[in-house]
Figure 1 (cartoon, one colour):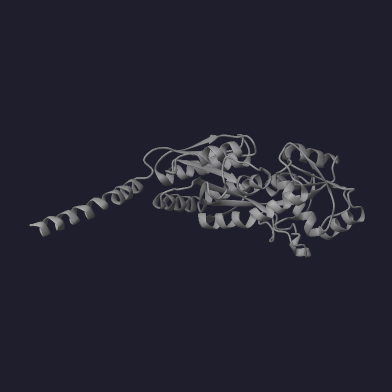
Figure 2: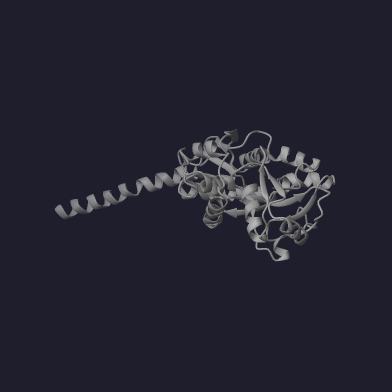
Length: 327
């Protein structure tokens, strides 16, 4: 009888041990069972806001629940990112942001309410956009070699605009100078629009901006392109050369990724990755990405984390060397 009792107890113990995982699996299978919040850490109207709302709508159709976008702007994406980092890791609070959140901010802020790797579970990149060196129409340089010759002829004479201190534009400008051996004066503006206005007006000879911001002005003939900062030419500007083509080791761009708080159940993460990959493959989504200057292309969460790990040391070294500080 004692042996039978011990055997029955063991069977019950094993059965009890399996209840939690099975229940969790059923909960994961039911995801999502309520609306999902997609936090956009930028103000309304910008490229990330437009794309965030587009992806939210498309993900809603794929996941069968509303994906509701919400702007939580401020402090260079820190407010929105900090909010998501502290949310429950259940897949119902997501963040859509750029490399600013994950590689630029950690390079210039000694204290953040999140860790770029430990706080987030990356779902995947939806698209990328390169940066570009632009010039006023009257500047006597039209390609990388001519730009370098002009800049080296008078170190510290020529200035370049960026859309703000501690932004991807300034980091790219510093990387460009290091790669080309040039010395320019950085002039930070409060946004891309005022920098572009002064470039068009001739108040400043050069600027570093995103390809997406440059395309309308290039098409209108108001400014000219010197080179893109990516290793390969942009599909959006196939006639514009790269610095790399001229022998300068420069490869810099920015990317748009969706992330969740760290600790996401694997089944939930898999569902989100699959949904995002399918959404990015949709022709209407790809067309919209291209229309605002992004090259569509899904990369999974593991690839995003590898990208962050690769970029972080470079950004920190650049910030230290150039004394880059937040506004």
